Image (cartoon, rainbow, N blue to C red; front, side):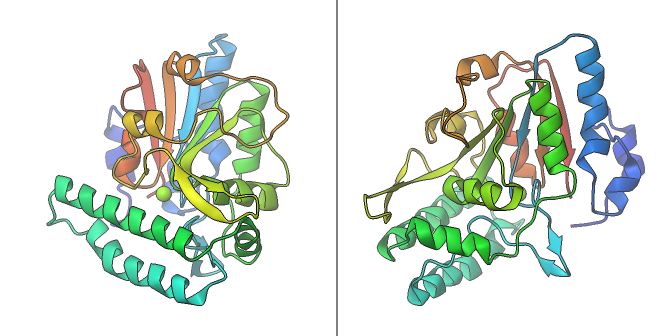
Length: 277
Ligand SMILES: [Mg+2]
């Protein structure tokens, strides 16, 4: 992607930049970008914020020690090399199409749906187990951006819900949170492609509508795995979908244009979008 035109961003009425320099260095500090926004609202006794964040390359780092960080799909080694190769071949075919500007959006949307569904079918057919997910995460090149833990703690203290809305894999994302952060947050929920395992821990199906990179909108959110699925099993009840919908100030974090659709359908009053480009 082209370098960020910070001056143009600052002139836009739809963009807020907490610290333009942190965009230039491609290593934004979440606290610098977000804390001032939430703090100012908290002082006004408003409790109507929510944060909707993409996962891959938004909460996680794009580069790790000079290597491209892996995604929640990309890090999976399913313990069956033949199927790992098959999924890689799908990636090699479809990934260039995802960013091909000459393909009309409706056609590209169908291609993405095809890619995701073929990939999920291979995970089932190849016998993915939950243990393989744990092992894959343990050996993966994946890390959170600096400041993510502090941001989650900051928002948890203020009862601001965080929705991680991802076209990746919910179960993998949860495992990344467990292994990399070593704690859970009662305000963090995950809407993503959710797996169903049998009693032997082997993947048998996916719940709900497939979420891919081009349908991250409210429809996908409603049709996806149950909204109450979240990290941590012992937390008390928290906002359901309806009450989250009532939170009319949205802070949206993403790294692709399709991420802007994550808040579609919400009747928000204010949306601040932060792009990690
Ligand atoms: Mg992303």
